[in-house]
Image 1 (cartoon, one colour):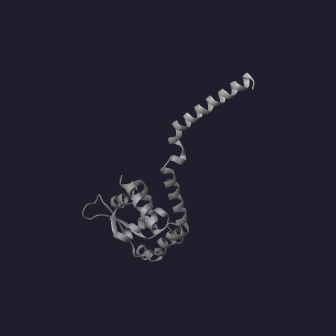
Image 2 (cartoon, rainbow, N blue to C red):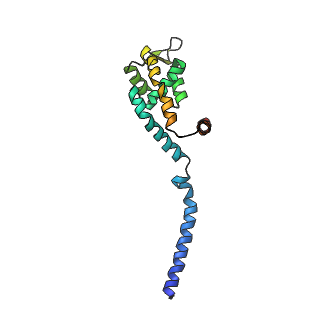
Image 3 (tube, helix red, strand yellow):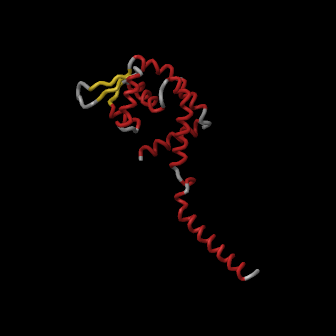
Amino acid sequence: MTAAGAGRTARQADVEKRDKGMEDKYGPLKLENQVCFPLYAAAREMIRRYKPSLDALDLTYTQYIAMMVLWEEGAVTVKALGAKLYLDSGTLTPLLKKLEAKGLVTRARSLEDERNLIVSLTPEGLALRERALCVPARMAQCTQLTPEEAATLYRLLYKLLRT
């Protein structure tokens, strides 16, 4: 081997050593090392899978989860709905206006405290619950998780939300 060849080999070794150190330094920035990325991607994928079922109900995913709260609780304040769904009023106001335009909900000031806006189901909104009954079962089929895995995922996701 020539001196130039030996020198190049030594330089290559230095570069590899430097790159290894850089790799370790920047490892935390790798996408594959992020918990948030598969969570984000899985959430987007789940919402994509909901779309055909929700299109049949003429609802977006966010409208659907708002309706789920209303089906469960009947009437709620906008503030309570936002807290339950982890949404701010800037997101909720247009969403509720669209649901109201569809005839599914009404919005009215509270008689006890006019600062509170109460969202209530209309008879049409309540009737939509019957048509939505098939959605959770369809979604459970497309996750390919065992009941135990689904329960673990559910528990871990809510643990994240509570922190």
